[in-house]
Length: 368
Image 1 (cartoon, one colour):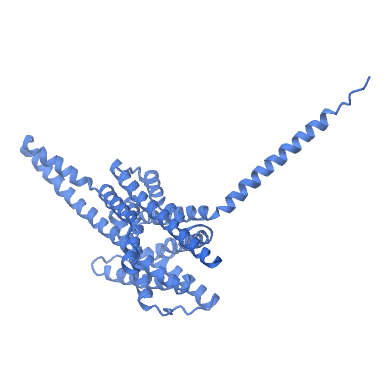
Image 2 (cartoon, one colour):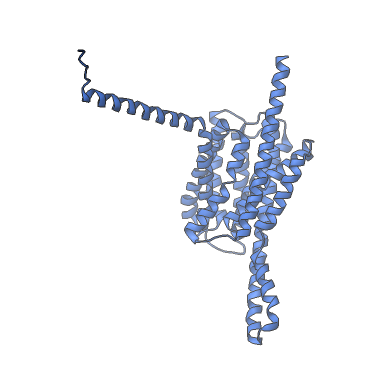
């Protein structure tokens, strides 16, 4: 009779524990590897969130936004200029044979930031971001005009979606109120008519500022589209990003200072030096971190994917508005914003597929 060999229970449990530890380690290693493989996405998400917070906090600071921007652009221009001139030994005033593109980049980059802030005076951040992200469509149209690219059916679809999205997202609620009050005027008394007239006049005033904010936000999207087109040309000519950023921040600093001085002629407020030296510098440092994250994301991920992720700025703005002000947007805004995001996604995917196809054709020619 053969005796069965019994394995001690302690040995079995030790083997089971060791196996489970190895499997858990392999799961964590796989997860860590995948996170690192797509680290560009996380850099982009972090940069977008940081940018949204830096912009939103301007509403909470008891000082003029453009005064705060003096501190921000001062820090950015010093850091970009020092990095380009002393570390990389670039000529920070060079145009690299592209004076028009450099001038457009400088003017349009400054215009994008400053009109974006001007729009933020009159609009909620969610509305400003929704209008801003139409720049992807305008940039595609500018590429057709300037670089003679073919206008495709997909461009027409994106353009229609963008226009519909703009109409829905920026539909002024004040006009609806005016229409309601106007339609009810036949059934109200004289006293009520007087109060209604007051409400309508105040609504028209707020509607004026709302439309002014829309104009600034739309201008910001157009200037950003022009900036992207100019930078596309400068990148082809190997113009360093640090030089482009220095030129834009230095010019924006000059514009912010000039505006601040001119504003003192009709508003003789003292300069908020405390806020400029604290909040302005802190926001400038945060924007430098944001720029670093954007650069890391561009090195690791496809530009079209990052453009799609950038539309999450609208979501971040809605969350911040609800957390701090309990502000919600009407359902019409969300439909319009979704149309704008859809147009950006369509164009980004089309650009990615076009670039991939041209790269494959180029590789096939090289193989032949």
